[in-house]
Length: 239
Ligand code: IPE
Ligand code: IPE
Ligand code: MG
Image (tube, protein in one colour):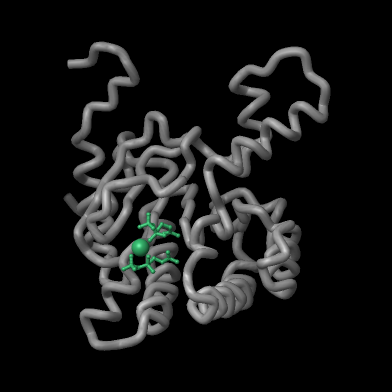
């Protein structure tokens, strides 16, 4: 199937998420420090954003740093933070004139995040807030349980009598995004690691063995084709 034909297929996912796992192992296999894996991983994030956009998919979420990743050595955390800062500069340059909205999922009031990262994220999301063609959701200091608690606390504050899914979802970071169709976690690990417990209840999951820095556009297309063959029943009976 050629790409143009694939793009026209109604079964194409509309919202994909990457859990970008395996940077450390990728570096270790090459006798390099983990930071090298993260650098190559960040370069690949950029390539995969383009790959997803090329395929005409409108929404992309990327799990970059979990609320549990603070448990890592400070040196590694610091390096990751410097990569996020660079990413924000680079994405501003690349996307500010395009119709791309950049949002950040995660606790950005947390003072463990460097001030410059918090400020750049705020500015980037404000400056791209009105864009409509593509939504890029960068999950940094993100935890699914924390997101649910954040929503609950905001709703309690509003003093509503009873809460339904619609009200609840308005308080999630993904409020403006389409339902999450496909989650791709690289490196072969098969767990969610606190990623979007609410949004993934009916997502399809894929666990390619490739480590994130070597995950290519070809691998992405393979995952998408395999996703399209799945029978998403949502509890119904579908032949
Ligand atoms: C994913 O790669 C990147 C982040 C969690 C920030 P890892 O750093 O988890 O790589 P492995 O799992 O140790 O190989
Ligand atoms: C999940 O990867 C978080 C991100 C990719 C940002 P981890 O490598 O942190 O997950 P665990 O520790 O193996 O569950
Ligand atoms: Mg990992």
